[in-house]
Length: 443
Image (cartoon, rainbow, N blue to C red; front, side):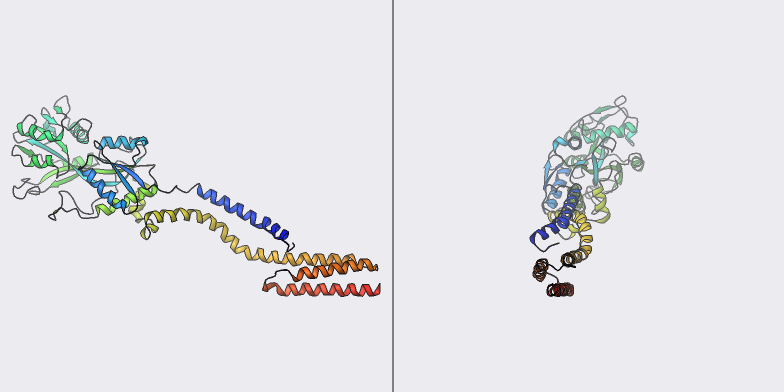
């Protein structure tokens, strides 16, 4: 192997090209398993402005903005609109609030849970002149069950049917929530179901009406066992109003637990970050201007990772189990996800480069020795060519070749560690030269 440019080119094709091909193949294979970079925007299906869903979405939006991600909040008609948007990728919605009991894994294909995020209490108010102790007592009564196709309507019908109260033995009326107060106060309706936050104006008006009472659900624990998406709650005496002692006694209730639903195809990094947002936002105290907590609001109770209806997203599971990804604990979200992707590329490259680094000295030593051995071979060829020769012309050609070999060898770039071998070669060249000189004299 000569030390000419052609020799170096040959070495490159012998060692460099295969290495480049292997590295390129490894990078291509790694790229097949790398997620594309996460988008910087995603959309969430909430409800109307000012609703608990919308207010909560705004808090998530503020957290995500600190991490360079924009959350677009879509106004919707409520939980069933949200489910429709999540079920159809054409809407471009990756996240949405779903009232407990709305969907299960069996009918919500491609939708997972990031956790349960809030209580939505079920309130059952009745006219004070109506004797009602259990939901079963609503048979034969005129009952308000919320707007058709809404979350209140869905849960009310389900609870009534569990008590054998149906449209066949009761008058079930679909009605917008603000009209409840007048209907129940006047006695035109005997009772009404509502799924609303405790601070909603309709709830406050009903509590302050002397013609309306809140029904105590003595069977609340049993309901939560039958329907896993329900939780038993107790509204403590006087909690709504200490001055008016509302409610006048401890009242048993049930509440659904709202799920933060996510589409399976939302980028894993965004699902991971959204789960972090849930933990951060719900870990903050929820106090009003007077420093008072909202009814049923307990700091740190949400998010709940146990979900009785939807499978928990794998990204959410990792966050609940181990916290944020390691790099996100020290770096901004965008930079951390970039490094995560680069690491995936680096692993196969290191798997190839480490053995190369290990064997590189051996390959290099072999290359240096090949250079020297090549000229030893040339030297041997010259020596064999003049053995037994007495022709002065042949001997002169051999001597010229020896001088040429010596000039080339003197210019070979050899590392210091191989200098002794270079000097050995030069000494052997001189040995052959002396033999040729002797042969010339003899001739």
